[in-house]
Amino acid sequence: MWRATRNRFPAGPSELLKRWSFGPLNNNPLEYFTGIAREYGDIAGLRILNFRTIFVNHPDLIEEVLVTHARMYTKGRVLRANRHVFGEGLLTSEGDFWLRQRRLTQPAFHRARIASYAAAMVEYSQRMMDGWRNGEERDVHREMLRLTLQIVGKTLFDADVERDAQEVGKSLELLLEIGANFRRTIFVPHWLPTPANLRVKREVAQIERIIYRIIAERRASGRDAGDLLSMLLAAQDEDGSRMTDKQLRDETITLFLAGHETTASTLSWTWWLLAQSPAVEARLHAELDAVLGDRAPTLDDLPKLVYAGHVITESLRLYPAAWGLARLAVEDHEIAGYPVTRGMGVTMAQWVVHRDPRWYDAPEEFRPERWENDLLKRLPRFAYFPFGGGPRQCIGNTFALMEATLILATIARKFRLRLVADHPVVPLASITLRPRHGVRVKLESREKKEAVPSSNGKQAAVAD
Ligand code: HEM
Image 1 (cartoon, rainbow, N blue to C red):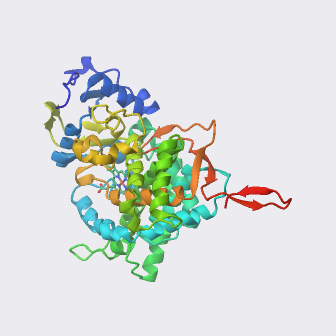
Image 2: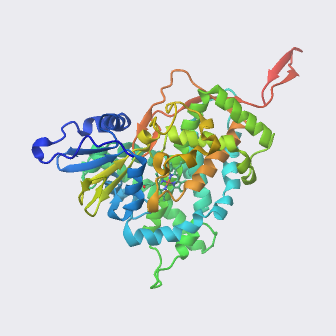
Image 3: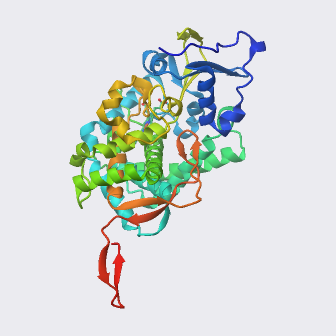
């Protein structure tokens, strides 16, 4: 059972919980929510001005919110405040409209369909590495962002966004950075011409230009590429009407954003963790060498890349790209005896639950082997929920896990990534959790060093 509640909502304005201010929340939300959990236990009422939210920190209570009472909530304030970016896309739409769009989109994410994306995931990773040289320094976060954006573009929209990837990637990144200011996002209307709002508008326009071009090209060609875009274009309502360009734009921008930055950040955290854990890295390399030898991975290898899968699972535990979720109650009800009234918020934090010693031994340590012997099955359902849960669970979870494991295997087979000393790797908890200044690494080829005679006749070691 969840721990006893120690902090009930104050009965009147004189008992406001003054400690909840946007300052600490904005500055370091990870620390902030960890502190609330430590101080108040599994459920806490928080209040600022007339803005009230309940923070729940027990898997059973999280299940109540995301599954049992799912219909009593809409998405939280931060996502709703970002509707001018995502429009009525899957992440932000609600009710019957959301359900219809989810059903339309779902077939693109069926297991069999996703399997056909595996080759593109490996091929784009290899193409990226063609430009990598032994000994050179790179920001691997930037590399992962570009790679996952290209993969989403190719697999879901059959669009080669290589030449656009830099611009779209930069714009999406800026949007997320601006979105990291919760106070601004919630309290400053998006139509006010503040510098940040104007910036958002410019970046959205930049992305839209590219998205509308992709839509127009497909409409003009009339080609059925068998991808998500063709499915969305062909979808018809009962009255025969089709999706407008605006609806297509909303779904597309949502999938580009939800589908690339999360996986890229997961991989960036993975490289960072691996570089600091030589024993884990060695075990991963041993598995890759045994399963793959000197060839690139394919879909069929995935069931054999068990340890690589655990590395990704563990990385998503410690650095969940979606570090917290929020909901807004639309009906009065109760959670664990707390009255939840319409308009009240509920917040949950994967960051906190995933590091709770009640569920994980040595929770701060990176130990992929903890997932051996079916730990997942033994945990309460919502002690591990990097992809959320209930009806609004991530539509791309299987896609993301397959993509992350294939990219990890493709790259780790060829390169070791060493951290560049003195480069700060700091988590930035905006809508997603990403390394604020990137992750600078030195590339070290894993190809066997062979001795070849150098021009002066002496033996020299070279790596591929
Ligand atoms: C490691 C990678 C990923 C993580 C950690 C992640 C996490 C999440 C989470 C936690 C949610 C639920 C949000 C909520 O309940 O408020 C979500 C929703 C969503 N994700 Fe992901 N995601 C990842 C990758 C992807 C990919 C690859 C795609 C698409 C290609 C994608 C598309 C979506 C969409 C469209 C939604 C909204 C679904 C709906 O409400 O119907 N995600 N994701």
